[in-house]
Image (cartoon, rainbow, N blue to C red; front, side, top):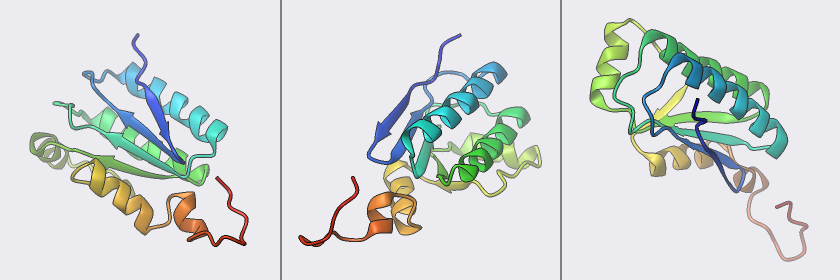
Length: 135
C-alpha cells in the first residue's frame, strides 16, 4: 500500500492526493494525518483532491471524519480542487461533507485558513521588533 505524502509548510499540513483512492488509503491517511497534526502542532490542513476522479460515499464520509478529527487537535481542514464530476457525484449520492470547508484551489484554501485564523501567524498578528515571536 502506497502512503499519501503529508508536507509541512509553516503550520499547515498539505496533502496532495495523486492516486486513485481506495478505502484503505483513506483510513491510512486519517491515521497518518492525526499523528502529524499531533506531532507538529499544525493549525491548518489542506487536502488537495484535484487529481481525484472518483469519490464514493465512504471516501466522502472519511473527508468529513478527517476534518472532525483535525478539529479535535485544533486544526482547520480545507478540501481544495474538487472537480465538477466529483461534486456532482457527491450531490447525487446525497452526501454532504459536513463542516468541511472547501475551496476552488490551493491558493484560495490557504486564504481561507488565513482568514479564519487557521495558522499561527494570523493568530499572533504582526510581530513588532520588541515583541517575542513564536515561530
